[in-house]
Amino acid sequence: MNYDNVMKLALERGFYFPSCEIYPDAQAGFWEYGPVGVSLKNKFLELWRRELVRRDRMLEIDGSQIMCKSVFEASGHLASFADPIIKCKNCKSTFRADKLIVELASIEVPESAPIEEFDKIIIEKKIRCTKCSGEFDKAHKFNMMFKVGIGPEEEPAYLRPETCQSIFVDFPRLFKTMRGKLPLGIAQIGKSFRNEISPRQSLLRLREFYQAEIEVFCNPKKLNELEKFSEVKDTVIRIQVNDSQKTLTCTEAVESGVIPNKFVAYYLGLLSEFYEKTGIDMKKSRFRKLSDKEKAFYAEIAFDFEVETTTGWLELVACNYRSGYDLGGHSNKSKEKFEVLDDNEKVLPHVFEISMGIDRSLYSILEHNLREDKENDRIVLSLKPYLAPIHVGILSLVKKDGLEEKTDEIYMKIKTKYDAFLDHSGAIGRRYRRLDEIGTPFAITVDHQTLQDETVTIRMRDQMSQNRIKISELDSVLSKEIAYP
RNA sequence: GCGGAGUUAGUCCAGCCUCGCAGGACGUCAGCUUCCCAAGCUGAAGGUCGCGGGUUCAAAUCCCGCACUCCGCACCA
Image 1 (cartoon, chains in turn orange, cyan):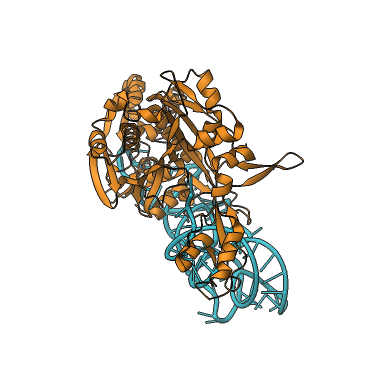
Image 2 (cartoon, rainbow, N blue to C red):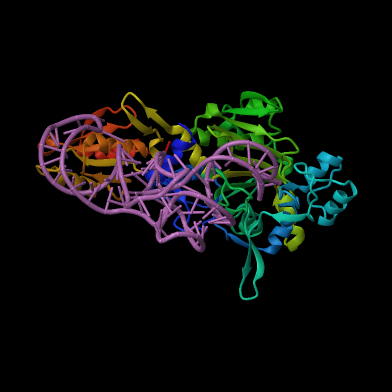
């Protein structure tokens, strides 16, 4: 199924929809999750916690979304998270000043250079608009961070453009108070904000979005000393380097040099195991090693985890070896000590980051699991049972003869333990199909036999088959079926 | 931001050229019927026709501006 099918499902069934849509001045790039979407998101995040945070004994924090100016001076975002932009006076087309200068004058100007530098070269080299040959206006910087004014004096602060800055600035306290030992993973789920020039395609490019980030702090001398690497040594990962696609175990990837060390390989292995369990089609996924030009300004080694969708390859996770860039930057700026003891030696930890886009991941899960069952004339969302927004539908075959009351009774018993949905109205087939469409794996139906022998039918979403089970066994059957892997 | 195409009920769309009662299908809700897979019948709810202005006796329809969406370009640390 394609983007449009997912979009239709999202709007009709309450997965997600545009923010502030009743007002004409609603800005693009802001979306809301409806009830079904929130339930899916919560379950996805619980899986993330199980497979990464708890498995690797990471610490999870929840930091502020608004952070002071110093944070972004130290992180480099104020200088580097901005593009030098020039605009044609005639046709109003905008260009990246640095890219245009490289293209037309073959002069490399760093994008963080003073803004007058760009104007100077444009005048000297007589650079004109490539579309209409018009003259350019003065260059200006477009910073992708949202600025906010704090208090009556409107002291400048910023909405964080990535959640991880909280983790870096909190690192000294966390390491001391949480009895930290390298390697130490610190995780966070939260919102980040980027003033995208042209947000597009609903959840795929947002101005306000969720990230689930993990920063692993490590001793750079010990990137190949990692006992727990054995847990993933046979885990298969798909990886693309310089346009050639390879499918290797983590061990093979390290030995062949495709991945530089066991440390990075371990986390790529964990991530791969995690996504396998989300129901994303791993045959349509890859880790892609980024070239020097594609990497972010702070990254030394970078792999993107990408998934193929009907809109093209989509980056879901950025895995960056950020070296000592972040802690070094904050240490210099704040004068706080970031070195820690490892084997009685003081080290400034290096950082490996696993920065996951939650919204894009949820979209990919929906697209990869939505299918049209033509034979039975239905749309089915074949989610893993543990990710299903509604675990189980509780239905009465008909309302009369006391079946409605009996059905209510069963619903009352399980509604606090499971995400259950009670439905009495309309044809039974229609009710099954509605549940199929939002990915509900099971439907319990109360029929006339229930009143005689205390049994109900349980219907499986994917096969449309039914078994009869005792009401007394319902809880144990359901809890087994919807358990996380 | 540029170019093109769009915006009408929850969803998809007709109506626009040539101003003249706000429509259809699906979905939703209620009732009847059937009683295990979107059947049928009856009824109902749901719209500032993207927003603002103009022209006109009269604007979803013509004109202007803006916003948003999609496609392409550019952008995406």
